[in-house]
Image (cartoon, rainbow, N blue to C red; front, side):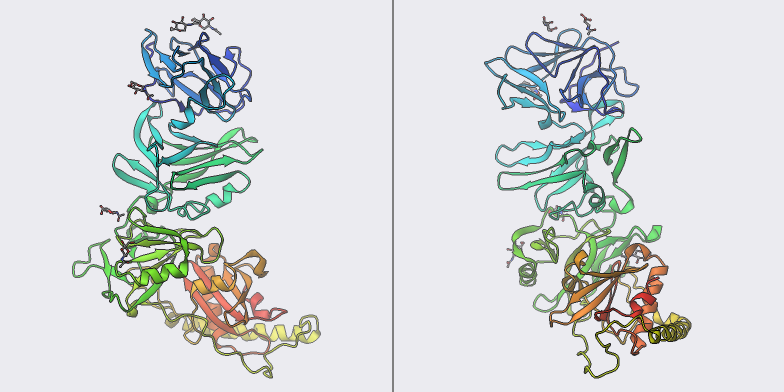
Length: 589
Ligand SMILES: *[C@@H]1O[C@H](CO)[C@@H](O)[C@H](O)[C@H]1NC(C)=O
Ligand SMILES: *[C@@H]1O[C@H](CO)[C@@H](O)[C@H](O)[C@H]1NC(C)=O
Ligand SMILES: *[C@@H]1O[C@H](CO)[C@@H](O)[C@H](O)[C@H]1NC(C)=O
Ligand SMILES: *[C@@H]1O[C@H](CO)[C@@H](O)[C@H](O)[C@H]1NC(C)=O
Ligand SMILES: *[C@@H]1O[C@H](CO)[C@@H](O)[C@H](O)[C@H]1NC(C)=O
Ligand SMILES: *[C@@H]1O[C@H](CO)[C@@H](O)[C@H](O)[C@H]1NC(C)=O
């Protein structure tokens, strides 16, 4: 069998099982000059988790050197050795140097495979590595590894895909941490971007909300943004399952987690997930909506429309020219923020200051908070002056604030609510418990009847209640209840501490009810519909509730003060009562 050694750097190869059975030919975790590793031998880290040796991937007959989570390995004639000058050398069958670590030392060196899977070359007794494999990633990112840039030395670490499943030599794809704007993991195919994770928002990469589900209890991200370096990695929490990220030969990014019960690697994340993850799927100033029909994924953002007269798909332009001195900003909520290569970032200011800076700069197109880790509206400032490219709706996405002409602005801010009514009105409950008396039961029945009657009427009138869909498909001017003002999502977030768990006062089938505090000191009950119920049923429930409640004035029902319909959010704001009230429940099953 021909022996071709890997011209690529030491990489990590992942083979099925993580638990290493004791192997006869596995040597200790350390070797040095005079102790060669031949093709029939492996090096096993002291904790048994990682093995290094020669292998043939897939059906390939060629031999490569790799580090993996486990393994059976066969024979052949490659040799890994430590040279006189302190380098690791990989020799092929005829004794030629196929690869060298190029490390050098005048004193003796040894190579140790550490329990985290890192092969380090160092002087015995020293902790300083002359060379280590984590600084030369292949297609896998392990706990403790980092990718990114060292700005002073110019060193850069990134993942490189294999050429194919059976060929570990460098393939078509790279996954690089772009630190030019906000840090973002970009997959490149040659010089073409194919997929990005979305800008780092202080907690995660904004286009991958899934991480919040699997990250807990499993790993912590390590993001370093300093004048010296911009790097990112993850550390597995003590006792958590083994996990790694791999960039496949087809350009997919997968996170795998070892599942001890099924004894298999489970994919917990796979990107790109869908058509909207394909980089720049829609043109500039477009938003990709994966729930939309196949022909209609792309739509212009608020304030933009298709270029007339030809209306070429994807070419979005402002509906109304921006007068720099006038106008304002309007939100595009719940999105993966646009690509950030040409943005200016300032993490040291507040979002309010960011807004002022954007409004004062005629070339500002949009801004967003740079860091939302502390909740609320976040902190810092990302300002776009170029295109807005590669935006999509994501669950729990961030809010982008667009510069808009005055006529394109959303209706004026919300909580200019009607003043509280005089306290003598019968609508106000006595503060004592209000359920528990026979009278209440009668009240419930009466109210339920009343509601049914109104729903019926409302249903008959439904068509006139649903507003038209604009050609862009996204800004749906559905105005369910013209008699009740609408609220900005941002001010409702502010009122409820960003829908903080601690403000929850009730839960129902369609929504969660939060206690909220208005700037004027008034308390309100904020009912946020669960987004997963928002398909049809949930949206109908919302329209129905707004329709019904905006018309009702009844002693046993709370008054609907305002509503908010923004992206995937459907929120109702009620007056607050200590013992809550019927309609929070009537509408929640
Ligand atoms: C590996 O192969 C070499 C030469 O082919 C042989 O000398 C050595 O004993 C073998 N080692 C083991 C552990 O089988
Ligand atoms: C290690 O391998 C090199 C190259 O094949 C050889 O010259 C050397 O003698 C070997 N050393 C040992 C201890 O086997
Ligand atoms: C080591 O140095 C040689 C000669 O300068 C170079 O050709 C080779 O690419 C280097 N190897 C690595 C792994 O950097
Ligand atoms: C995406 O498209 C679907 C289907 O047209 C629509 O129901 C949904 O409201 C859209 N999502 C957003 C956030 O606009
Ligand atoms: C507007 O913002 C751009 C990008 O940050 C900056 O280069 C430019 O100097 C700013 N202009 C003014 C007038 O502040
Ligand atoms: C960033 O700026 C460069 C140079 O002006 C331009 O070629 C590129 O298209 C811009 N990228 C984005 C995403 O706007």
